[in-house]
Image (tube, rainbow, N blue to C red; front, top):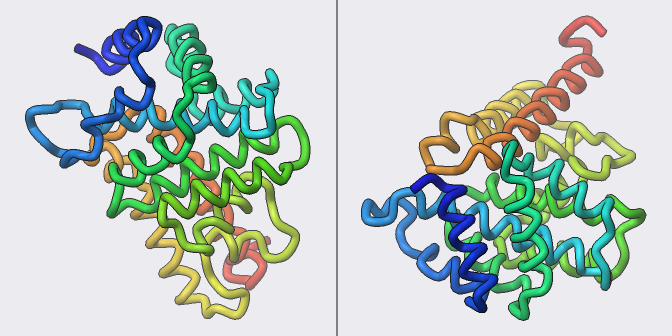
Length: 237
């Protein structure tokens, strides 16, 4: 059964009263468990939809701009828009707190914080969609980052990628000090490129939607590196 066939089946189960969180129950098992082909892919998709819906509702209501921001971040596959919309609506009304979904996503990727960082960046995108990020939204983002186990540097990078920063944005994106050497900057760039490379994520069993998010981050990383190189006179301006 294809991933979206399984998710459609899950939507039907939800509509019949099954708790949303129950769909992620086995996700804490080994991600490469052979008896559950596609488990990580499905669990990632369900978890991101749930966190996106909870993020959109963190300030008390879900605006159309927030829902549109989710669709842009998640890059809904053609033909699956209605299924994702139903899932999104069910998730935002689910009684379980966002902590449930954040913990299960964190359990899926204990050794891949860059994936969780990309999810957090998408949540920032949703939070900013209808105006400045409010206190409730900021608290939501901070709590998700904490549950994910993300460092302050990863949190700031996700924030910078979504919102932009005033001082040395490329340094924040690459996680380097503004006084870092050219070699240190290149090493940081290479680390991020390897961590977000599509081949690596495909090998981990992530869905196309996650690959699209990583590709966006990869473009941001390359742009930051190019900008620093130009500012340092390493390439023509």
